[in-house]
Amino acid sequence: MVQLLVEPKSVTDISPPPELYAQAYRAMLLARVLDDKYASLWRSGKIHGGVFLGRGQEALSAAIGVALREGDVFAPLIRDLAGRLAFNESILDGVRTYFGSPLGPMRGRDGNVHRGRPREGQLAMISHLGAMISVVNGVLFARRLKHITGTVGVASCGEGATSTGSFHEALNQAAVEKLPLVMVVADNQYAYSTPTSGQFACRSLVDRAVGYGITGCEVDGTDLGACLRVVGTAVERARSGLGPQLVVAHLLRLCGHGEHDDAHYIDPRLKSSALGDDCLKRAEEFLRQQNWAAAETLAQWRSEAIRKVEDAVALVQREPTPDPFAETWSALATTRLVEGNEPQGRS
Image (cartoon, rainbow, N blue to C red; front, top):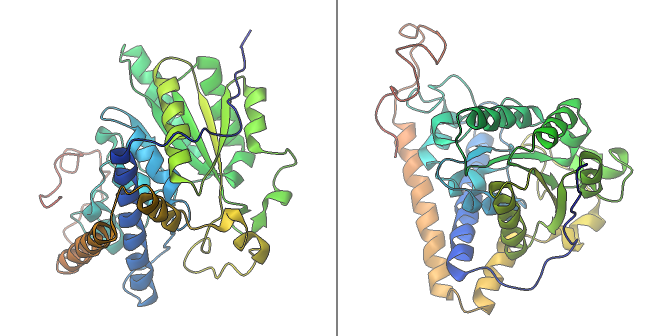
């Protein structure tokens, strides 16, 4: 019989280590600056396809990235730029993917967020609607068969994806097999334009942990300190063999579903509520209050983030575009294009 352990619904007031908080904040800041740049490039017609921003979800995402370590696996959501960066994805990987550069991890074959480096634990996204959970399960089960221990896998999705069959089947499989999976759900109040009232009837999605027989906890997704504690604890519980963990974060998407969406449907009352707090501004204010970073330091961090983004964009804009006449269009897993044999230039 599976024993259910549901974590308390509130977190303690114990602050995370200053160094960890600052590390996560800088990943959030870099992600926000880079996202703003992507949005500007899309509006100016220099990026084709969809652009999906993580504005308002950076605290939760960064907390995932800093909780992981080498050997772990991460299947990010479309709004997980902060987590990607915190888990050591290079800025150039993202910029090259958006611009379709043949020097990027996808060799110019895909746009926006469908990028990754599986050998480094960064899984390329198939879909943000729950499909990646079973992929993480497969990696974790394969490692079990190879007697590899001490690693975890994190899958991320929005609350809308929890209504899909792929979410249910994969989470049920992880529970039955007791895989070291951490399922992080960003409850950002809207599945595209459908409010949570039209998605599920339970009080909170964390209540579904009972049905799977796994540990569940929820957190204020606008509070970086709370996200660091709750996500960090869930990762360590999974790593120590306590089975799958479900983390549900409550927040609000502070932008449209994509840059093509003006988000007119978002209830103004949500924007003015605590859910509408900007997690980046809240984290910055906390750093000041704790005297962990002076105003000059915060300004320096922002300047460094802007410089890194501008340098990366300028570099990629000078790089050649794919040549359809030289491309064989064979699968990436072929000898010539196998991961690790790509052209030099990553940093």
